[in-house]
Image (tube, rainbow, N blue to C red; front, side, top):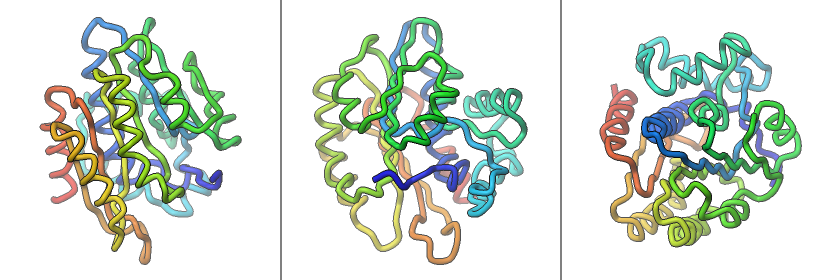
Length: 258
């Protein structure tokens, strides 16, 4: 399906949760003088304008990055604030960094990046900001299978589908198991929504926790963006979590409970 465009949701509470943990992991990985690979299965356009009509139509960023900054949730030296400030300096005060630009901020010469995006307009927009990353206009799950294990073998994969294809919930456990067999040292980070009265994500996570008992599960909950909206929270499931990520996840989770 090619209808999903993240501009309507960019910078929302789920993005804040996901991107804060992603940036923390990338900062941790690049703190060591060893090359790494970054793989993203559903990259989107990479750069978002939170003043655009699409973003203001939902105004979801008001409960996400705008709320976090107003409440000083993230210190100036938090890993997420570094790429966010960089894109604002380059593209303007309403710019917001999607995960490809967050990764781009941290990656160094000698690191590699593989980004998949199937939507033609999103792919074209991503192509304008992707830098040296290798882009794939194809199904992200297929791309990830094809490039795993990557070179360098050290690294991180972000799996972030829209879940418009409902079969994703059933397919993802097997997908992560397959990638883990090929790339047993890779950090595999899966984002998923928490939906009202919907047990698909709960069943998926139970299966994943059974397969990966040492993985990190981080979940936050928040009010629906608008009355009747189904998403009431955000989850991150991380296989091979780096040391210290659990403490950062606990800190982020507490912010949403205050």
